[in-house]
Length: 262
Image (cartoon, rainbow, N blue to C red; front, side):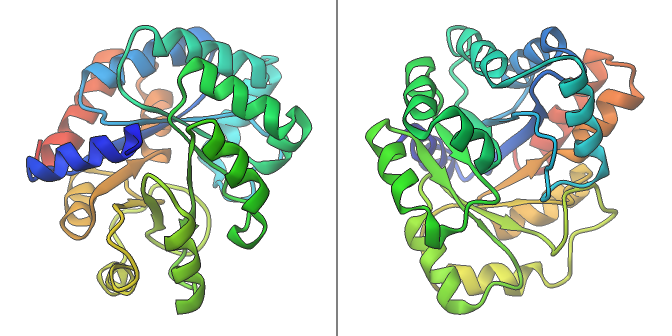
């Protein structure tokens, strides 16, 4: 059982759901994002996604695109993020998941990236633009380095593709609450229940809902139907609007965690 699977197993035994915040590595600076991730771990996060800044983040909306642009202008690169993650895994036990686009891994080298991730203690990788049909080589390398590869499934995915993703995904399945790109929405899609039911018929693996989770109420509604919720754009908006007031950011995460059952 992987570290991510262990977390879901323990939460399930306690009748709890996973809270998975997403932060952009190096935004607004490496120092701040490192401190934030440490604080998120102490304030309710069960796992934490770290995005590697990328110039063409096609799955992400304006909020995360802007954060990536700032990080890139600051000169942050893949080695910086991996080094930061390596420092964090020596301080916290919360599993860290790298979210990145395939071109970054391709340019870095699949073997080199997976080996580096293993050595610093990364638990899993999300690659939104790597189709499951073309992921066999990467999955083999990832599994050899004890990395879970978490695949995304969309409301528009047909049944046979959901089956393929359910079989290939390890750790959990990233379920998009809606079609389109990331970004905070005012409410969870009314079609989410039917969508997750379709996936449940294919797998018993944990389901985590992301894209559009913007408030404790939205997290609560999504958690009723799933095993966990992922919060990205809303958290980055708060980082922007709060002027990086750590207490406000941690209070938001605590409220999210409380809303999904503590």
